[in-house]
Length: 149
Image 1 (cartoon, rainbow, N blue to C red):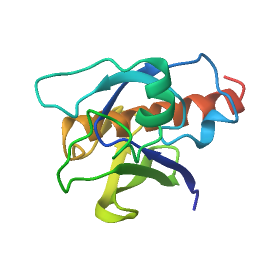
Image 2: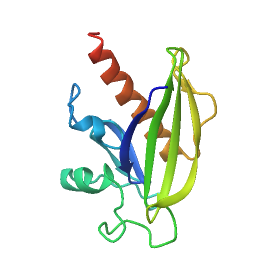
Image 3: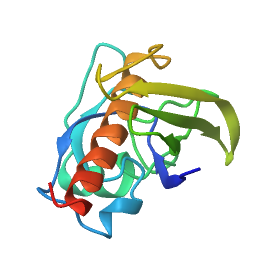
Image 4: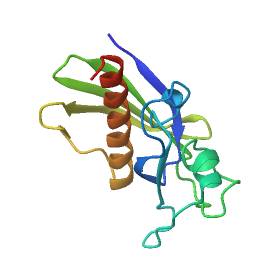
């Protein structure tokens, strides 16, 4: 069984593209497997483009409650974590954990078809779905580079 784990991303961060080309061993341990640009979805219907400092220290790393002025003041989640638990060459099994105060808030498996380039069942919510896809993209990019492709 293969396990690739990472830290946590802000649950309101919608990743758009990797911030750097190629893989960087230091970035592999970032929550989404790379440093990403993107937008903040914390305020519904009011997407916001964070600056580089905010992207690096809050959006890509999670646990922004109390540090980000846009972070909701409700009892919602603080961070999202992903782990590859299986890569059989045809599909990936990803496990996600959404956290609140360093405790599980929600969790579950996600199955991703490599041939179909999609999840068997969509992840819960558009933002988490994009985070899960960004995580898969980072993983596959590093895997291809390691294999010399």
